[in-house]
Length: 412
Image 1: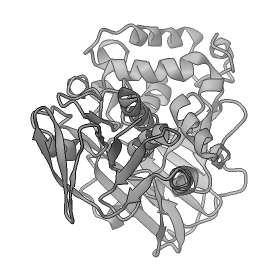
Image 2: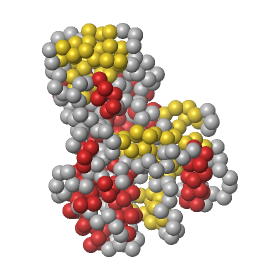
Image 3: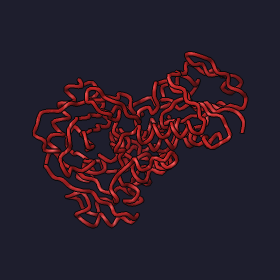
Protein backbone atom coordinates (compact mmCIF):
# COMPACT_ATOMS: atom_id res chain seq x y z
CA UNK A 1 0.00 0.00 0.00
CA UNK A 2 1.25 3.46 -0.82
CA UNK A 3 0.34 6.90 0.37
CA UNK A 4 0.11 8.40 3.83
CA UNK A 5 -2.95 8.58 6.07
CA UNK A 6 -3.35 11.84 7.97
CA UNK A 7 -5.70 11.52 10.96
CA UNK A 8 -6.88 14.83 12.39
CA UNK A 9 -7.78 14.35 16.04
CA UNK A 10 -6.47 12.00 18.72
CA UNK A 11 -9.72 11.28 20.52
CA UNK A 12 -11.04 7.75 20.64
CA UNK A 13 -12.32 7.96 17.05
CA UNK A 14 -8.93 9.04 15.69
CA UNK A 15 -7.03 6.50 17.78
CA UNK A 16 -9.39 3.72 16.70
CA UNK A 17 -8.85 4.61 13.04
CA UNK A 18 -5.08 4.59 13.57
CA UNK A 19 -5.23 1.13 15.13
CA UNK A 20 -6.72 -0.28 11.94
CA UNK A 21 -3.73 0.98 9.95
CA UNK A 22 -1.06 0.07 12.51
CA UNK A 23 -0.31 -3.32 10.96
CA UNK A 24 -0.60 -2.13 7.36
CA UNK A 25 2.38 -1.18 5.21
CA UNK A 26 1.29 2.43 5.18
CA UNK A 27 2.56 5.60 6.86
CA UNK A 28 0.18 7.12 9.41
CA UNK A 29 0.34 10.50 11.14
CA UNK A 30 -2.02 11.75 13.86
CA UNK A 31 -2.38 15.51 14.29
CA UNK A 32 -3.95 16.67 17.57
CA UNK A 33 -4.71 20.29 18.50
CA UNK A 34 -4.52 19.70 22.27
CA UNK A 35 -1.38 18.92 24.28
CA UNK A 36 -2.72 15.43 25.00
CA UNK A 37 -4.81 12.69 23.43
CA UNK A 38 -8.19 11.38 24.49
CA UNK A 39 -10.62 14.24 23.97
CA UNK A 40 -13.46 13.80 26.46
CA UNK A 41 -12.22 10.32 27.38
CA UNK A 42 -9.12 10.99 29.45
CA UNK A 43 -7.74 11.48 32.95
CA UNK A 44 -5.82 14.36 34.47
CA UNK A 45 -4.20 15.27 37.79
CA UNK A 46 -6.47 17.62 39.69
CA UNK A 47 -4.50 19.82 42.07
CA UNK A 48 -7.55 20.77 44.17
CA UNK A 49 -8.13 17.10 45.00
CA UNK A 50 -4.52 16.00 44.87
CA UNK A 51 -5.41 12.97 42.74
CA UNK A 52 -5.91 11.84 39.18
CA UNK A 53 -9.53 11.85 38.03
CA UNK A 54 -11.39 11.36 34.77
CA UNK A 55 -12.72 14.47 33.05
CA UNK A 56 -16.01 12.59 32.77
CA UNK A 57 -17.44 9.44 34.31
CA UNK A 58 -17.87 6.74 31.68
CA UNK A 59 -18.73 3.08 31.86
CA UNK A 60 -18.83 0.33 29.28
CA UNK A 61 -21.30 -2.48 28.96
CA UNK A 62 -20.07 -5.96 28.13
CA UNK A 63 -22.01 -5.77 24.85
CA UNK A 64 -19.85 -2.87 23.60
CA UNK A 65 -17.98 -5.07 21.13
CA UNK A 66 -16.00 -2.32 19.35
CA UNK A 67 -14.72 -0.83 22.61
CA UNK A 68 -13.70 -4.25 23.92
CA UNK A 69 -11.96 -5.05 20.61
CA UNK A 70 -10.06 -1.76 20.97
CA UNK A 71 -8.98 -2.67 24.51
CA UNK A 72 -7.92 -6.17 23.50
CA UNK A 73 -5.87 -4.83 20.61
CA UNK A 74 -3.91 -2.46 22.86
CA UNK A 75 -3.62 -5.03 25.66
CA UNK A 76 -5.60 -3.23 28.35
CA UNK A 77 -8.86 -5.16 28.61
CA UNK A 78 -8.05 -5.98 32.25
CA UNK A 79 -8.24 -2.27 33.12
CA UNK A 80 -12.05 -2.46 33.05
CA UNK A 81 -13.60 -4.32 35.96
CA UNK A 82 -17.13 -5.27 36.86
CA UNK A 83 -19.33 -8.02 38.25
CA UNK A 84 -19.43 -11.47 36.72
CA UNK A 85 -23.12 -11.06 35.96
CA UNK A 86 -25.34 -8.10 35.18
CA UNK A 87 -26.36 -6.25 38.32
CA UNK A 88 -27.45 -2.65 38.84
CA UNK A 89 -28.16 -1.14 42.25
CA UNK A 90 -30.75 1.63 42.60
CA UNK A 91 -31.97 4.02 45.29
CA UNK A 92 -35.09 6.16 45.28
CA UNK A 93 -34.23 9.25 47.33
CA UNK A 94 -37.91 10.13 47.83
CA UNK A 95 -39.16 6.80 49.15
CA UNK A 96 -35.85 5.46 50.47
CA UNK A 97 -36.38 2.19 48.60
CA UNK A 98 -33.36 0.27 47.32
CA UNK A 99 -33.28 -2.58 44.83
CA UNK A 100 -31.03 -4.47 42.46
CA UNK A 101 -31.89 -5.09 38.83
CA UNK A 102 -30.51 -8.52 37.90
CA UNK A 103 -31.12 -9.66 34.29
CA UNK A 104 -30.31 -13.31 33.60
CA UNK A 105 -27.39 -14.13 31.32
CA UNK A 106 -29.28 -15.43 28.27
CA UNK A 107 -31.52 -13.62 25.74
CA UNK A 108 -34.78 -15.16 27.04
CA UNK A 109 -35.68 -12.66 29.80
CA UNK A 110 -37.02 -14.99 32.49
CA UNK A 111 -35.69 -12.54 35.09
CA UNK A 112 -38.78 -10.36 34.69
CA UNK A 113 -40.84 -13.24 36.13
CA UNK A 114 -39.02 -13.01 39.47
CA UNK A 115 -39.98 -10.07 41.68
CA UNK A 116 -36.57 -10.03 43.36
CA UNK A 117 -34.82 -9.38 40.04
CA UNK A 118 -37.03 -6.66 38.59
CA UNK A 119 -38.02 -3.14 39.60
CA UNK A 120 -40.13 -3.25 42.80
CA UNK A 121 -43.78 -2.48 42.24
CA UNK A 122 -43.75 -3.64 38.61
CA UNK A 123 -45.28 -6.69 36.95
CA UNK A 124 -43.71 -8.95 34.34
CA UNK A 125 -46.28 -7.80 31.77
CA UNK A 126 -45.13 -4.19 32.16
CA UNK A 127 -41.83 -5.03 30.47
CA UNK A 128 -43.48 -6.13 27.24
CA UNK A 129 -44.21 -2.50 26.39
CA UNK A 130 -40.56 -2.04 25.43
CA UNK A 131 -41.04 -4.31 22.39
CA UNK A 132 -42.85 -1.48 20.60
CA UNK A 133 -39.65 0.57 20.77
CA UNK A 134 -37.71 -2.07 18.85
CA UNK A 135 -40.06 -1.70 15.89
CA UNK A 136 -40.59 2.06 15.97
CA UNK A 137 -40.43 3.75 12.53
CA UNK A 138 -37.37 5.76 11.55
CA UNK A 139 -37.66 9.35 12.70
CA UNK A 140 -40.01 8.62 15.59
CA UNK A 141 -39.30 9.94 19.10
CA UNK A 142 -39.18 7.53 22.03
CA UNK A 143 -42.44 8.91 23.42
CA UNK A 144 -44.26 7.75 20.28
CA UNK A 145 -43.26 4.14 20.94
CA UNK A 146 -42.96 3.89 24.72
CA UNK A 147 -45.19 4.96 27.59
CA UNK A 148 -43.05 7.62 29.24
CA UNK A 149 -44.93 7.47 32.52
CA UNK A 150 -45.26 5.06 35.39
CA UNK A 151 -43.03 3.26 37.85
CA UNK A 152 -41.12 1.13 35.35
CA UNK A 153 -40.32 4.10 33.15
CA UNK A 154 -39.15 6.30 36.05
CA UNK A 155 -37.09 3.56 37.70
CA UNK A 156 -35.57 1.81 34.69
CA UNK A 157 -36.18 3.07 31.18
CA UNK A 158 -35.72 6.77 31.90
CA UNK A 159 -32.33 6.44 33.71
CA UNK A 160 -31.16 3.82 31.19
CA UNK A 161 -31.94 5.88 28.09
CA UNK A 162 -31.00 9.20 29.68
CA UNK A 163 -27.49 7.90 30.38
CA UNK A 164 -27.14 6.36 26.92
CA UNK A 165 -28.53 9.28 24.90
CA UNK A 166 -27.59 12.27 27.11
CA UNK A 167 -30.96 13.59 26.04
CA UNK A 168 -34.32 13.58 27.80
CA UNK A 169 -35.77 10.22 26.69
CA UNK A 170 -39.14 11.76 25.88
CA UNK A 171 -37.53 13.69 23.00
CA UNK A 172 -34.84 11.13 22.15
CA UNK A 173 -34.75 9.22 18.86
CA UNK A 174 -36.46 5.84 19.12
CA UNK A 175 -33.99 4.37 16.60
CA UNK A 176 -31.01 5.19 18.83
CA UNK A 177 -32.70 3.86 21.96
CA UNK A 178 -33.63 0.68 20.11
CA UNK A 179 -30.04 0.21 18.89
CA UNK A 180 -28.73 0.42 22.46
CA UNK A 181 -31.41 -1.98 23.66
CA UNK A 182 -30.72 -4.53 20.89
CA UNK A 183 -26.99 -4.64 21.61
CA UNK A 184 -27.25 -4.88 25.39
CA UNK A 185 -30.32 -5.77 27.44
CA UNK A 186 -32.13 -7.59 24.62
CA UNK A 187 -29.16 -9.97 24.33
CA UNK A 188 -29.30 -10.83 28.02
CA UNK A 189 -27.26 -10.07 31.08
CA UNK A 190 -23.94 -11.16 29.58
CA UNK A 191 -24.21 -8.23 27.16
CA UNK A 192 -25.02 -5.60 29.79
CA UNK A 193 -22.56 -6.19 32.61
CA UNK A 194 -21.31 -2.75 33.77
CA UNK A 195 -17.55 -2.23 33.39
CA UNK A 196 -15.62 0.67 34.95
CA UNK A 197 -12.03 1.82 34.38
CA UNK A 198 -10.82 1.42 37.95
CA UNK A 199 -7.49 3.19 37.31
CA UNK A 200 -8.93 5.87 35.06
CA UNK A 201 -9.75 6.32 31.38
CA UNK A 202 -6.25 7.33 30.33
CA UNK A 203 -4.76 4.25 31.95
CA UNK A 204 -7.32 2.04 30.20
CA UNK A 205 -7.66 3.64 26.79
CA UNK A 206 -5.25 6.44 26.00
CA UNK A 207 -1.79 5.61 27.36
CA UNK A 208 -1.75 1.99 26.10
CA UNK A 209 -3.15 3.05 22.72
CA UNK A 210 -0.40 5.63 22.28
CA UNK A 211 2.26 3.11 23.28
CA UNK A 212 0.86 0.56 20.84
CA UNK A 213 0.70 3.05 17.97
CA UNK A 214 4.19 4.37 18.62
CA UNK A 215 5.50 0.78 18.58
CA UNK A 216 3.99 0.52 15.09
CA UNK A 217 5.79 3.71 13.96
CA UNK A 218 2.66 5.83 13.85
CA UNK A 219 3.64 9.50 14.06
CA UNK A 220 1.75 11.50 16.70
CA UNK A 221 1.92 15.30 16.79
CA UNK A 222 0.40 17.32 19.62
CA UNK A 223 -0.48 21.02 19.72
CA UNK A 224 -0.95 20.93 15.97
CA UNK A 225 -4.23 22.66 15.22
CA UNK A 226 -5.73 22.38 11.75
CA UNK A 227 -6.72 25.87 10.61
CA UNK A 228 -7.96 25.06 7.14
CA UNK A 229 -8.19 22.52 4.35
CA UNK A 230 -7.52 23.37 0.71
CA UNK A 231 -9.70 21.47 -1.72
CA UNK A 232 -8.95 21.07 -5.41
CA UNK A 233 -10.56 18.93 -8.09
CA UNK A 234 -12.84 17.13 -5.61
CA UNK A 235 -10.11 16.13 -3.17
CA UNK A 236 -8.06 17.43 -0.24
CA UNK A 237 -4.97 19.12 -1.68
CA UNK A 238 -3.33 20.44 1.49
CA UNK A 239 -3.73 20.74 5.25
CA UNK A 240 -3.00 24.13 6.78
CA UNK A 241 -1.78 23.90 10.34
CA UNK A 242 -0.74 26.80 12.53
CA UNK A 243 2.94 26.02 12.03
CA UNK A 244 3.07 24.50 8.55
CA UNK A 245 1.21 23.45 5.43
CA UNK A 246 1.24 19.80 4.45
CA UNK A 247 0.68 18.93 0.81
CA UNK A 248 -1.57 15.88 0.39
CA UNK A 249 -0.31 13.68 -2.41
CA UNK A 250 -2.60 11.95 -4.88
CA UNK A 251 -2.40 8.63 -3.05
CA UNK A 252 -2.73 10.12 0.46
CA UNK A 253 -5.90 9.96 2.57
CA UNK A 254 -7.30 12.17 5.33
CA UNK A 255 -9.52 11.13 8.24
CA UNK A 256 -11.18 14.07 9.97
CA UNK A 257 -11.88 12.95 13.55
CA UNK A 258 -12.74 16.27 15.19
CA UNK A 259 -15.90 17.60 16.90
CA UNK A 260 -18.90 18.31 14.68
CA UNK A 261 -18.66 22.13 14.78
CA UNK A 262 -14.97 21.98 13.84
CA UNK A 263 -15.64 19.61 10.95
CA UNK A 264 -18.45 21.86 9.68
CA UNK A 265 -16.10 24.85 9.70
CA UNK A 266 -13.47 22.98 7.69
CA UNK A 267 -15.49 21.10 5.08
CA UNK A 268 -17.72 23.10 2.72
CA UNK A 269 -21.31 21.93 2.51
CA UNK A 270 -20.97 19.42 5.36
CA UNK A 271 -24.20 18.93 7.32
CA UNK A 272 -23.67 18.05 10.98
CA UNK A 273 -25.74 18.03 14.20
CA UNK A 274 -26.49 21.55 15.41
CA UNK A 275 -27.99 20.94 18.86
CA UNK A 276 -25.98 19.72 21.83
CA UNK A 277 -26.56 18.62 25.43
CA UNK A 278 -24.56 19.26 28.59
CA UNK A 279 -23.09 16.89 31.17
CA UNK A 280 -22.08 17.76 34.74
CA UNK A 281 -19.59 15.58 36.62
CA UNK A 282 -18.76 15.88 40.30
CA UNK A 283 -15.88 14.35 42.26
CA UNK A 284 -15.58 14.22 46.06
CA UNK A 285 -12.40 13.17 47.84
CA UNK A 286 -13.74 10.73 50.41
CA UNK A 287 -13.55 6.98 50.99
CA UNK A 288 -16.87 5.31 50.15
CA UNK A 289 -18.65 3.40 52.92
CA UNK A 290 -17.71 -0.27 53.25
CA UNK A 291 -19.79 -2.47 50.99
CA UNK A 292 -21.15 0.42 48.93
CA UNK A 293 -21.97 -0.67 45.36
CA UNK A 294 -19.47 0.43 42.68
CA UNK A 295 -22.30 2.02 40.65
CA UNK A 296 -25.59 3.28 42.07
CA UNK A 297 -28.50 4.59 40.03
CA UNK A 298 -30.29 7.39 41.89
CA UNK A 299 -33.98 8.12 41.29
CA UNK A 300 -35.67 11.42 42.24
CA UNK A 301 -32.47 13.32 42.88
CA UNK A 302 -30.24 15.86 41.21
CA UNK A 303 -27.65 13.14 40.69
CA UNK A 304 -28.32 10.16 38.44
CA UNK A 305 -25.35 7.80 38.71
CA UNK A 306 -22.95 7.59 41.64
CA UNK A 307 -19.59 5.85 41.13
CA UNK A 308 -17.63 4.59 44.14
CA UNK A 309 -13.87 4.52 43.59
CA UNK A 310 -11.43 3.52 46.35
CA UNK A 311 -10.47 7.15 47.04
CA UNK A 312 -13.48 9.17 45.90
CA UNK A 313 -17.16 9.34 45.06
CA UNK A 314 -17.97 10.58 41.57
CA UNK A 315 -21.26 11.66 40.03
CA UNK A 316 -22.61 12.07 36.50
CA UNK A 317 -25.66 14.14 35.55
CA UNK A 318 -26.76 13.74 31.93
CA UNK A 319 -28.76 16.24 29.84
CA UNK A 320 -27.73 18.83 32.43
CA UNK A 321 -28.61 21.95 30.45
CA UNK A 322 -30.77 23.19 33.32
CA UNK A 323 -27.80 23.04 35.71
CA UNK A 324 -24.93 24.17 33.52
CA UNK A 325 -25.27 27.88 34.35
CA UNK A 326 -25.23 27.37 38.12
CA UNK A 327 -21.97 28.22 39.89
CA UNK A 328 -19.62 25.37 40.64
CA UNK A 329 -20.09 26.02 44.38
CA UNK A 330 -23.87 25.74 44.11
CA UNK A 331 -23.59 22.58 42.03
CA UNK A 332 -21.20 21.06 44.56
CA UNK A 333 -23.62 21.76 47.43
CA UNK A 334 -26.61 20.33 45.58
CA UNK A 335 -24.73 17.25 44.45
CA UNK A 336 -23.14 16.60 47.84
CA UNK A 337 -26.57 16.79 49.50
CA UNK A 338 -27.71 13.86 47.34
CA UNK A 339 -24.43 11.97 47.74
CA UNK A 340 -24.56 12.29 51.53
CA UNK A 341 -28.13 10.98 51.60
CA UNK A 342 -27.33 8.12 49.24
CA UNK A 343 -24.26 7.03 51.19
CA UNK A 344 -25.52 8.04 54.66
CA UNK A 345 -22.29 9.96 55.22
CA UNK A 346 -22.90 12.45 58.03
CA UNK A 347 -20.03 14.87 57.65
CA UNK A 348 -19.30 18.20 55.95
CA UNK A 349 -18.64 18.29 52.24
CA UNK A 350 -15.09 17.09 51.50
CA UNK A 351 -12.73 18.48 48.87
CA UNK A 352 -14.53 18.50 45.55
CA UNK A 353 -14.25 19.20 41.85
CA UNK A 354 -17.05 20.02 39.42
CA UNK A 355 -16.55 19.58 35.66
CA UNK A 356 -19.12 21.15 33.36
CA UNK A 357 -19.29 20.22 29.68
CA UNK A 358 -21.77 22.52 27.97
CA UNK A 359 -21.63 20.82 24.55
CA UNK A 360 -20.71 17.31 25.65
CA UNK A 361 -22.66 15.41 22.99
CA UNK A 362 -25.03 16.09 20.14
CA UNK A 363 -28.71 15.99 21.11
CA UNK A 364 -29.86 12.45 20.34
CA UNK A 365 -33.19 13.52 18.85
CA UNK A 366 -34.78 12.22 15.67
CA UNK A 367 -34.12 15.58 14.00
CA UNK A 368 -30.40 15.58 14.82
CA UNK A 369 -30.07 11.93 13.87
CA UNK A 370 -30.98 12.91 10.32
CA UNK A 371 -28.12 15.44 10.28
CA UNK A 372 -25.40 12.92 11.06
CA UNK A 373 -23.15 12.39 8.01
CA UNK A 374 -21.74 9.09 6.83
CA UNK A 375 -18.00 8.41 6.89
CA UNK A 376 -17.62 8.95 3.14
CA UNK A 377 -17.69 12.56 1.98
CA UNK A 378 -18.05 14.30 -1.37
CA UNK A 379 -14.24 14.49 -1.52
CA UNK A 380 -12.44 11.42 -2.82
CA UNK A 381 -9.67 11.27 -0.22
CA UNK A 382 -11.52 12.56 2.86
CA UNK A 383 -13.52 10.47 5.35
CA UNK A 384 -15.09 11.41 8.68
CA UNK A 385 -14.96 9.87 12.14
CA UNK A 386 -16.51 10.85 15.45
CA UNK A 387 -19.39 9.86 17.69
CA UNK A 388 -21.51 12.49 15.87
CA UNK A 389 -21.27 10.69 12.53
CA UNK A 390 -23.84 8.14 11.38
CA UNK A 391 -22.82 5.24 13.60
CA UNK A 392 -26.38 4.16 14.39
CA UNK A 393 -25.58 4.72 18.07
CA UNK A 394 -25.80 7.79 20.31
CA UNK A 395 -22.64 9.70 21.30
CA UNK A 396 -20.93 7.05 23.40
CA UNK A 397 -17.47 5.53 23.74
CA UNK A 398 -18.73 2.60 21.68
CA UNK A 399 -20.00 4.93 18.95
CA UNK A 400 -16.75 6.90 18.82
CA UNK A 401 -14.59 3.79 18.47
CA UNK A 402 -16.93 2.25 15.94
CA UNK A 403 -16.76 5.41 13.84
CA UNK A 404 -12.97 5.25 13.76
CA UNK A 405 -13.04 1.63 12.64
CA UNK A 406 -15.60 2.50 9.95
CA UNK A 407 -13.49 5.40 8.64
CA UNK A 408 -10.43 3.19 8.36
CA UNK A 409 -12.39 0.44 6.62
CA UNK A 410 -13.69 2.98 4.10
CA UNK A 411 -10.06 3.59 3.09
CA UNK A 412 -8.77 0.05 3.37
